[in-house]
Length: 393
Image (cartoon, rainbow, N blue to C red; front, top):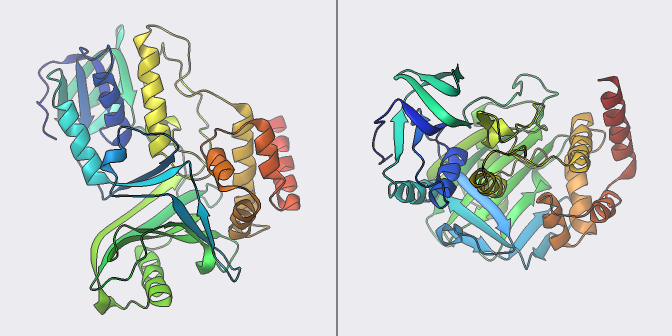
């Protein structure tokens, strides 16, 4: 990162973690009345290939970075015909991670008070009236806040009852024009044959180039070659492509916890604030995080500008949390295939309402309308389980 190294042992804000969430927070601080605060970003300096996707019905500052944007989406299921839907007034955007990080780092470099340290974070604690981050390069102190996107989110990778979104994606470039670019393929459940929720996600960015990502919503991870073989089979089955017909340009993979944050959301007057995955910014039922992270970071900076506050880092909506718990329980129980649940949602609702729901921007009446569009019995059973579980806690 092209930022100056640490010049002090004490800063106003220390960012523990310099990934998408941490740099987003720093970016919005730089645009605010807090832009004179001394900030130290501490990160180990290792980045994997990443793609950021989001949909929005209004213009945002990062739209110009989009490698490709779409106004239509495909949904494929076991039904004979696929569903092509217009999502206006929404637009679906794909940003290459390299482009986003390069842009953000250039913006942060305009602020001489923002410094960067590449180091291993060993612990986060308190020292006198402030807080501190212990690193492989020594201890640094925050007089105001530690903004933590480093601490792990509580999720047991080996526990099949802890749902994860796990995926592996390939960016492939064909030797000839082969992809239609007018729509993204948000879900392709033609690859799903069991009760686990598995699908292919396809983003064609040019007639020759596309991202293919094989994804599971389940508790059990696979070996990397399992996902790769699935992508190879998909490329041959639906595009007639063999290994001689394309180049593998990039590979990305990840594991995202799919559970509501079990930790209490921090108040803004606390010294240690968790953001990003650590702070529960990821939507538990979908794994989407980019749009939510931008919104939460922007709101967080706005509240910090006001001074000491009892506001929460993330607003708590018990109704929305319960809906997520029910949906996740349905995926855990596997009394119905995950593909059938999404099929019901997409075929029985207007696209705009569904995207609005996935952004948690629907009213409770709209939520009820969507709930009645899915198979009733598995959701009733899941709802009863979540209610019983909450009573015995």
